[in-house]
Image 1: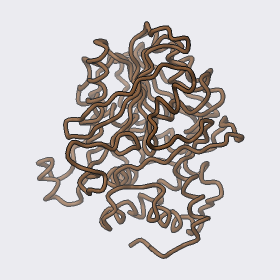
Image 2 (image 1 turned 180 degrees about the vertical axis):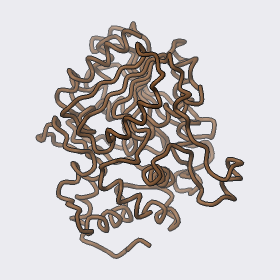
Image 3 (image 1 turned 90 degrees about the horizontal axis):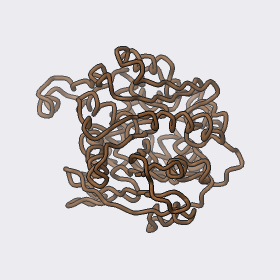
Length: 397
């Protein structure tokens, strides 16, 4: 059971900000009622459009589109969908200066850029019948993101452009797990041309992230859920207390949380002034990730008893996602850092083993010796060491 005692909030809140939102950024924090386009793209001189798409299960998601370069010249290359990872939103692709943010760089290279925002994030709070205060609003794990959010956004871009799109995802859940799961079920093949994943997470059994291990091994996510906290709110009191409990355990140095979670990022400018706005997710998703860490497999959400599993899956245990079923001829780009604690080399090798029959000319693996997890998005040299090879990959496909 969680220890819910009151605590020294100045310490706790500083720890939570660092522990969950590792990335420093250069853009000013946007107001909640401002769209991402207005606050982050138009201010940089780009044409930007706000779009809405409704998933099959009723969630209303926001999307942004950059249809031209900084001079207003319309895009002449295929659409590219950028999808953020867990606890962030689509603004991560726009936070740095135009010559360092991937969305701006792709637009200036002629691509029709689309940005996705998963359910529950600041600008994707809508639903056709539920509101975020309803527990049922948060009754989903990343299985639902793969089954509903991903097809809705991809099909919307396809319907708007009448072209196959390229997909670029980052990190946990929304960015990599969802598209890998969908491809393993042979979905999206008629709408996706190529897939690029930064720090792709498919397996977590060997993660070196001390905090990820602590949360999963202590079943803290489950404790949150059964206490009725269906929304995992990073800036909330309960989450603060959770990490206070972890930081008080022997062996945890919460003065260097960033390295403990992501590994020693080499190339993030320490003089950056702002911190990414924390984004909530469903506590059920955190439970799902905890299951992956503890078990080392890639399976659907485990309801914890055979009766509920039978109701949902007609099986005693959740079905697994078989990544060997990903079509061998779909172009894949995987970028990983050798210093990344979340994406351990052994887990990355499991993923590569699943792809061992992939067409060799369709699989690109970019390993960067000095990079950890956050460098791929916010490294001051990512535009050269990551984005240039990425654009070459997209252009060739």
